[in-house]
Amino acid sequence: MMEIQLGVIEAKYADMIWEHEPVTSSELVKMTAIAFNWKRTTAHNVLRRLIDKGLFRNDNGLVTAVISREAFYSKQSRQYVEDTFAGSLPAFIAAFTQDAKLTQEEAEEIRKMIDQAEEK
Image (tube, rainbow, N blue to C red):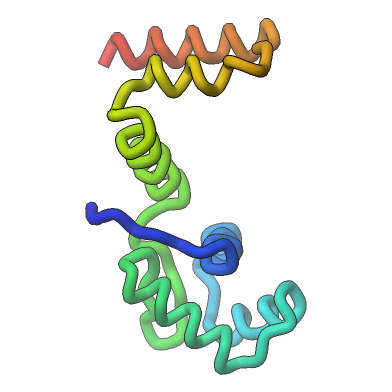
């Protein structure tokens, strides 16, 4: 999958779609009018950009995801670690935890994730 960059508003709109899909484009117009104070044309234009980026499809007014929210954000996270920390997950974790202490629950959850990843 190619790298997909989203602006803040595009990301909020994409999250709205993922949360409500399948959703009609007319329902999206109503939701964005309330959430963002958008007019119909703005809702359709931003939706078109998200479709052009390969995140969603619009089949006769029914909008559905091409890629799940989880898969998208997983890819974005991996790309961030690659771009910022030369792909080093330990370097990312060191930076993330440098000024913050993990709770016991967080540490246990991370250990479980590591164990599961090692089993794959």
